[in-house]
Length: 71
Image 1 (cartoon, rainbow, N blue to C red):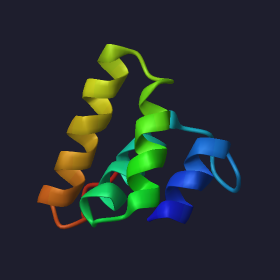
Image 2: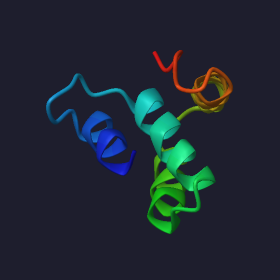
Image 3: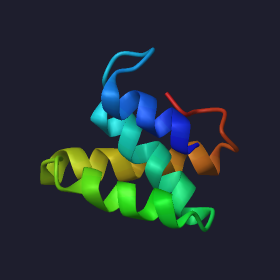
Image 4: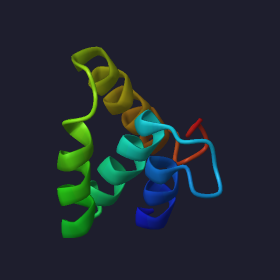
C-alpha cells in the first residue's frame, strides 16, 4: 500500500493524484504502518479541507468494499 501511495503522490508510473495518495497512505496507517501514518499526515498538509474530506471518504469506501471500489 505504501508503494502505491508513493506512486500516486509522486506521479511515478501513474498520473499524480494526491487524493489517491492520501487514500492509500490512510489505509496503510489503519493497518498499523507507522510510515503510512507519517506520510498520510504529511500529505494532509497538501490538501484543502474539501479535498481532505473527499480523500477520507475514498479511503472509507475502499475499505468498506473490501478493496473493490478504490477508484
